[in-house]
Image 1 (cartoon, helix red, strand yellow):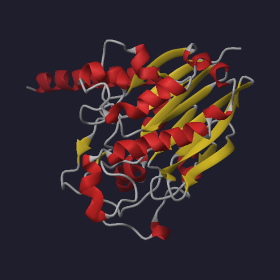
Image 2 (cartoon, helix red, strand yellow):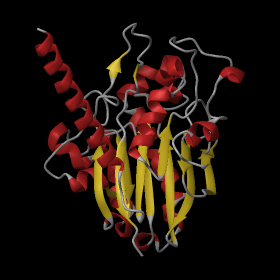
Image 3 (cartoon, helix red, strand yellow):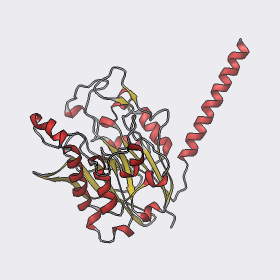
Image 4 (cartoon, one colour):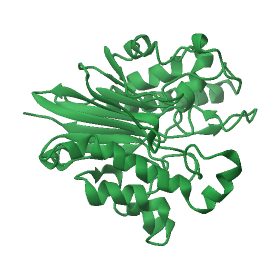
Length: 328
């Protein structure tokens, strides 16, 4: 029995070493590679509040990203509860510089913030703001705000657009008694389409030569892609596809995950929906060496055991990693 237990222990150690080796191998990338990590971390990584964000920062550090884009980058709730914390007690977003330093990033940037769900960029390289986007009242409000910033690596300017569109089935700012009617009229989808048009008009579409420049746009779009409709089988004019249709038909952006996996579908949530996207222009797309939605032992969404609201551990979304070869 003792020998059997020893064999089990040796086998377990071997498995752990293999897993560690795979993680470290994944984290390696040439110095001229730009590794992007995007993730909607649900309520400012609510799951991470329990352990001072140790598992979160350890996992990020193991991926060795050069740039991170975080959706829902603000703390909202008290640890382990669905009770909102006082604003002064929330760690994020004010302390992103401190948190990012733990995984090796010196710089951080917050885009336009209208509510509790801003996006934050952290980076090994200086981040320059171009525009913090919140839209215009009364009819062009960008619900969660958006951002346009850029970094430079190997003498190349890389524009980064972050966003998180309206999540509900009814339109933004609709009175409670009118929400059901708005749902029936696809108000949420129509509002998301308004948001993406506004964001694109104020970012990539301001540049006549954008198709020949390096641009990336990413976020939680809360909508489906026409590129995935072979799986969904929605009617061609379904409003759930309207956001992606606008991006693909009116901008030079390419849907990275879809284009690199034409015969496979990968959900970006714990369910069966790809609603998180990373787009880029062809000068960047042609430099991609790897792109994947990361579903591993840490990132895989698990519903909170106490069923607090709709919270998951570590998040209800999966991260996306993209490597770009920026060799001169």
